[in-house]
Image (cartoon, rainbow, N blue to C red; front, side, top):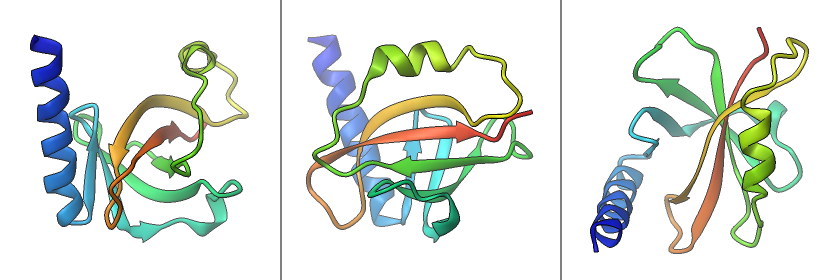
Length: 114
């Protein structure tokens, strides 16, 4: 029951913030829907500027996957811990409601390698 309440609360938060063209992932990462990064698009996954509430200077972006994408969460979890400085580093992934849509889309927040 608590899980259902948490999920509904997250959906309400995502929906409310989508109206303001800002989506919050993991109560921390703010995806700016009005700030696309077309150079970082990957196929149908569109990239957007993302800000971290806990580390505002961190260079992040998020890719919004198409509604029919099936995320491979076990690979995402492993990739978060790799320390190769020459690749993008995923930091979080979550399903959100994107502005102008009703279906959920998987969102992947990435950190530029360091």
